[in-house]
Image (tube, rainbow, N blue to C red; front, side):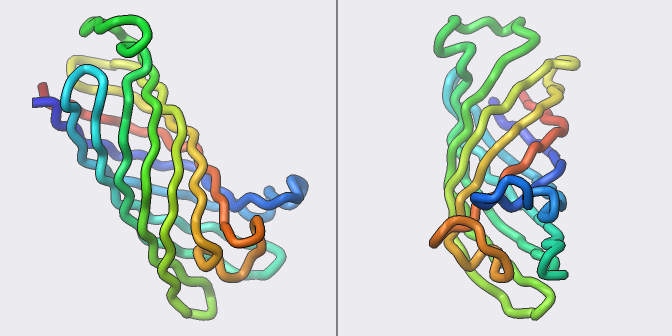
Length: 168
């Protein structure tokens, strides 16, 4: 009861303080998640993800595999009351992650991170939801070894979209 499975994917990029260079650091991210809604307000989600981001100026490709654990809060239920027939709602998402990344040099790096975002959901049918989740993740500086992000952190942005099936 309350178990859900998600598959999402979309564009991802590495940020830095020079916004004009963000276009040179694009790629994609895919995630598969298994989670549980404990009540109408709170859920935990465990995700496996794969990321590939091309770093144009260094002619290098970041490849990463990771696991993340996210807490999810249904904002519409918290602020507007529980409505099981609601067709659209927004979840706040925040969590921690562990990642193994490498680049064309073949050196593997372990990094920890934290991140979050907002997930917009549109119910397509009973138990089936279309989800869009813009999110930002902040990692230790070894996540993207051939790029410079912000001081001692590598920061990525992603816009993930996909389907979620919830067993009720």
